[in-house]
Image (cartoon, rainbow, N blue to C red):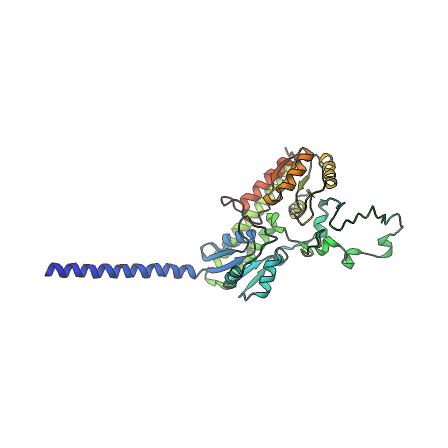
Amino acid sequence: MKEKMSTKFAAVVGAAALALAGCSGSGTDSKSSSKLNVSTSFYPITYLVEKIGGDAVKVNDLTPPGSDAHGAELSPAEIAKMEKSDLVIYLETMSPSIDKAVKTAKIKETMEIGKSVGLLPRTEIAAVSEQLPNVDDAEGHDHEAEGHDHEAEGHDHEAEGHDHEAEGHDHEAEGHDEHGHNHGVNDPHFWTDPSRLAKAAPLVADELAKLDSKNADMFKKNAAKVSDELTKAASDFKSTLADKQCTTRSFVVTHLAFGYLAKENNLKQIGIASFDPDLEPSPARIAQIKEIVARDHVNTIFTTSDQEMKVADSVARETGAKVQVLDPAATKRNKDKDYLDVMKENFELLSKSMSCK
């Protein structure tokens, strides 16, 4: 009888232990749910928040790996998930769908990161870029064919005081590319220069600290660390270019995504398309590229994504150049490489393509 009671007692103790273990597991979930929930509009912001927030933050990237960061479309379920976030960090004009969701959804806190990094007008980026003349655009307007030679007509716009930028009649400045898309006045691709992404780090830390003051010191420390890493990577690339002799300082890319990097390092990016990647090059356009490739001693045609590979291949076949991916890291292509890994790889590819020795 005594033995039976001991067995029964042991069973009760065992059950209690299991119950306590269950409570312990529930406590872990509770701890997990106490993390800040932050939704980010695309990968470079995700990278910053993960590095700065550490284990105190759970990140929901609204542009999943391999998708189009410019054309991200949010489903009702994704919008509902975003609405549960404590904070949404986004870049205005990068994705119209996300911009619309941010404006219409019920969100607790938002941070527009473009205000933190000093975005530049497309006209300023165009100064370090060579956008090929669009001889056969969607509207079929060839201004030379139409005989509109303003110098021949004697129109001196400066003398007449017509400043088209001041009047706002600059289609690139307005963000209207040849396809009629409106991507804003400024070029959004700031993150292709790591030193600009570094500028956003302390401000992201401040925003997280407002919502979680207990971890404010950690956020600040992590932000300083990632900012230093990004700034050093950018500085190392600039030093490499300064220390070596390069055959050319030009590079050809499927669309103008690397203007900030080009401006920071005194390079010239040559775009097959303009800021909008939706372009299939015509024979006339390819002929223009062939001339530039020969003129600037270019040996590589860079594509920014797998979706643009067809364009790069067709141009490479005509020019004799090779094709390589210059990844802008707008989304995460490779799970084993983070944003900084990709940028360092880009620097090496550019250096080799310009024959820097």
